[in-house]
Length: 223
Image (cartoon, rainbow, N blue to C red; front, side, top):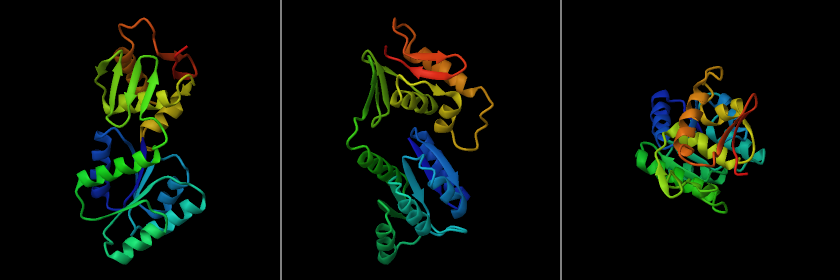
């Protein structure tokens, strides 16, 4: 799951980003409304967390532009503006939830989970390829009934490949979906994680699910 965080207080943004990444989310953090609007309009995110008081463009303006563009990504306002009229304005502008600062990270995390659950209500929380199962609510992977311990990055890679099973995903696209926009795509860290993931999900099994298509990318293939 990929989250866009637009928060101008860099210490707060760093705290939230680190906490969400420890919970297996990929997070892009930007620090002003102008850049935030550009990222928000890309439509690449499963959830957006917006401050309201931002440089250049405020959060309400960003949200209205996002909804005007027919992007239905769930939006959580996280802001120091905590009066009832502030909350009404935020929700009426198209937000799905509203959390005032200061906040407890556990509550923020619970609201993130609830919004993503609501978004995916019509989808199965289980991603499968033969006897490999990934529970996207509990963040647990199993093959043939045996649990597989994954790091957050390994989980993100496996989740994205399973969502696109039988489709070859290029190294560049995979990198964009599991790392934030500051990541250097010219390093070989994706290949390292792919090798570690392959050892965890395929080693000891006759059927190898994670395949490399040389010069193209990677694929979870059932056939």
